[in-house]
Structure formats: C-alpha cells, structure tokens
Amino acid sequence: MTDDATSLLPSDEPIQYLAPDGSVVADFDHLGLTPDDLVGMYRDIVRTRTLDTLAISLQRQGQLGVWASARGQEGAQVGIAWAMGLRDWAFPSYREHGITTVRGVPFAALLKQYKGTWMGLYDPHEHQVAPHSIPIATHLLHAVGYAKAAALSGDDLVTLAFIGNGGTSEGDFHEALNYAAVWNAPTVFVIQNNQYAISETNEHQCVAPSLAHKGIGYGVRSFSVDGNDVVASFAVASEAIESARAGEGPALIEAHTYRMQPHTTADDDTRYRPPEELAEWLERCPLDRIELYLRSQGLADDTLCDEIRAEAQAEAAEVRAEVLAAGPEPIEALFDNVYVEPPASLLEQRAAVLERLQEVHA
View 1 (cartoon, rainbow, N blue to C red):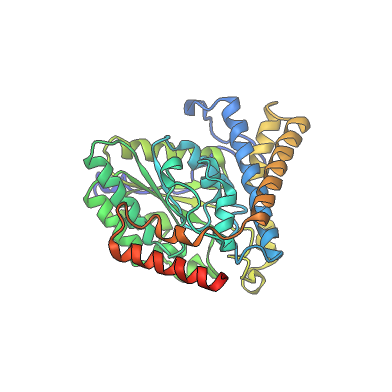
View 2: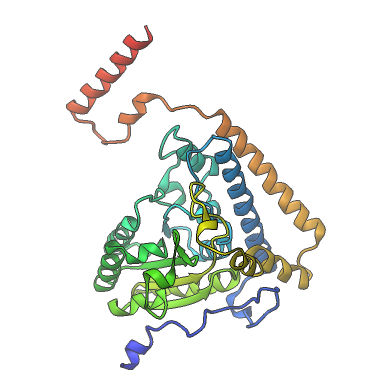
C-alpha cells in the first residue's frame, strides 16, 4: 500500500476527547470551543432528547403513524451539526433529529409529516436541510449532485450525507462514494454506526474491518470517531468539512454510537438484543458524558442543568400543542409546489379536484 493510500485509512481506535465519565482523555484547546459553545452543545443534546421523547409519547397516543428515535445518537449528530457552516447543507435520513434541531428546522413540522397531515412543512433553503429520506441511501446521490453543482457555480458550500449501518450495503451508497471521489465533490458522508441494521448486527451484514474502511476502495479519506463524544464528533467533522471545502475531496466519517430505542416504534428490539448490551451502552450515554464534563470544569451546576431541562420541556409542550391541533393542509396545496409555471394539464386537474370537493360538500 502506498503512502497516499495509507493516508485514507481511519484510526485504529475511534477518536475520542471525553471518556464516558466526562474526564478529558485528549486536550482539545486547539478546537477553539468556548465554554458557551460547550454549554450550547449540551443544551442541544437535551433539546433533541426531550423532543424525541415527546415524539415517542405522541406515537404511543396514536398521534403519529411511526417514529424512529435518535436517543443515544445525539452526541454525534449535535457535534457534527455544530461543525457545519451556515451555508453547508445536510441531507438526512430518517433519524437525524439532532441535525435538524440544531439547524433550526421546526420540530412540529417533522411530527406533522409523521402524523400524516402534510409533507414538506419547512423550507429546505431556509435551514439548508433537505427533506428527510425514508428510502435507504437514495439521498446520498442527491447530496453529491448538489455539492458538485455548487462547486461548478463557485459556491464553497459542503454537503453532509447521513446514513445508518444497513444503508452502507445499498448500491446507492457505493455509487455516491464513487461519484464523489471521481468528481472531487465536497461531500462528507456520515455513517451513524448504532450497532444495528434494523435487527442485524454489523457482523451479519458487513465483514470489513470497520464501516469506515468502505471509503478506501473509492479513494475517499475515512475517519473513525466515538459518536457518543460530542467534542470528538465536532473535531472530526470540522476537519472533514474544511478539507472538502478546500477542494481536497470527499470524506467518510464512521461515528460509533448506539440506538437506545427500538429501530422504530413498530419494532420489538427485545427479540434480537440482550438487555445487558443496552445497560453497557447506557454507561456511555452522550448526554451524561458532556454533563459530567461541564460539571467537572465548573461550567454547569444543578441550577443551569435544571434550567436547560425546563426550557426543553417548555419547547416540547409548545410542539405537542401544535401537533395535537394540526389538521390537513388545503387540498389545493397539492398542486402549488410542482411547477414554477404550472402546465395547462395540472391546472385542469386542480380545477377538477376542487370542483369535485365542492360537489361532495354541497
């Protein structure tokens, strides 16, 4: 293997700055994170977990059709979101609630989609967040295409494409990596290795040394990071993003984390994972880790932590009220965002639908 090829390899062990007990295992003063930044990351993790818990509750009450929880994965998502520039774009899968929360996407808009009242209730261009992708890995190609188009137009934005374990076995994942490398597209691929591809362990769906190694065959520089360490996630994402922005090519990040809830609310995870495994990963909780660090450094105390939790609960209460009150959007909105200049055929369909509705309600 050449020196250049060796440089593509991820580290032998996931990069880590904070141990599970909140102690510092590697100095990170060079990252330039201020005390306010670190408290802000903690606040966003608390917000994400609180809103995610609300969504599970609403689904159990019959308000949502289904929900894919991000509990346990907030550290990687929040850290990476904090590393993104304002003009950078996120292309999420269906579990990136930490990304969307940090980027300012209204959480109620996401829940209304899962409630089925309407789709696309936020402007992607306002938050630089593409619509959540339910199909597995198809959005990775969109991220690469958007990044290459931006580069050709002289825009220095970077796109971040998020995928889970199982998605790395999809053809679209490999095609996206190859296109990004060949086109030198400024795209950072983020694999959230939550240890499962739905109910299958990594060992049953991948025999590579790590998921990060999948980038090497395409000439993509790869990173391995402790995804439950929000500081390490920020550090690795910052390096990958700025490298891509500088024209040095795409990157692949494997964030080692854990899905503390079932795959979705329709899943029974007790059928395939032992309780002792969950207990082990609870000791590595990303929320507890950053809180323990902040307390040890005198940056947080009971008063601040209680205040942040209260703020998150108040936000959740507002979201809950909005979702409970949500009804379907006007039916004519189906036709409003299809074309800039609607063709005659679409206008005819719109008129026919409205006429039929008037007949039904007459």
